[in-house]
Picture (cartoon, rainbow, N blue to C red):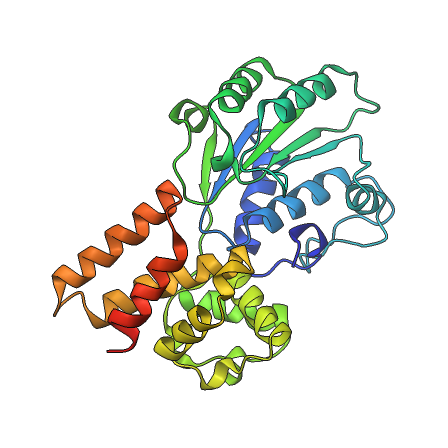
Amino acid sequence: MNPIDQTSLYGHQNKLLELINFYENKKLPNKVLLSGYKGIGKSTLAYHLINYILSKDEPFSYDIQKNLINTNSRTFKLIQNNSNPNFELIDIDKDKKNIDIFQIRNLIKILNKSSFNNKPRFILIDNIEYLNANSSNALLKTLEDTEGNIFFILINNNKKILPTIKSRCLDFKVSLSNDEAINVSNKLLNFDINNHIHNELLHYYMTPGFIYRLFDFSKENNIDLKNLDLQSFLSLMIDESYFKKDQTIKVIIHEFIEFFLIKKFSNIYEDYFNYFLIKMNNMKKFNLDEESFYLEIKSKLLNG
């Protein structure tokens, strides 16, 4: 589910109206930070705001009553084709670990060119926690030097970012309750996920993006999520080495391991709880051997 293709907005209608009111009253800051869990809908919210503003004077403008992007609009089609002169996306490349300085330098070249029209220009930078030291400093200078009708929307997945970048932006917190996340997921998938995913898995908070990917992954691999409780799910993920096959699923596995530790061990076996939690955090932080960690989880925790 790519946010650029999500023409309907669910769960964040009030946040969109808030941002639109800022813009219409000429109070929208040139630097906006959307912060929240990955998969919560931050990028989708940003695309809807951008489509609303850039399609205002077009025949097929944004439908604010239905929170719907008109797929016939020129703005939408140009953004889809990566050819809209008023929009630029910066994100981590699939074959890289960071947003590098060359991407920011290329952005600076684009910003130095004259605009083709009088419309605002939008720079959407997704996953900004993946900026490295050089690209962070280059972006900071760009944020400080850029004014006028150019708007930066930065997407942060509740991770640590350069404080000086954060201080330059108006920070909008984007969130959903567990019930709201499930309701949004039902609308995205067009069915009640309670009938397809075990309630123990749904009991742990997941964003709509994660729920959507989890269900998609289960279909691709013929996994019956309705009949897998938390322990069975983790055992299957480790036995079949699914953590090697999909980055999003690996993140979900980490979340479920933490949930399993909290649920089963935090109050009874505190030493076990702390040992595995610290080990998992170090594994993610220092890129330590994953397979041995998962096998230890399986042998010492999941097998009783």
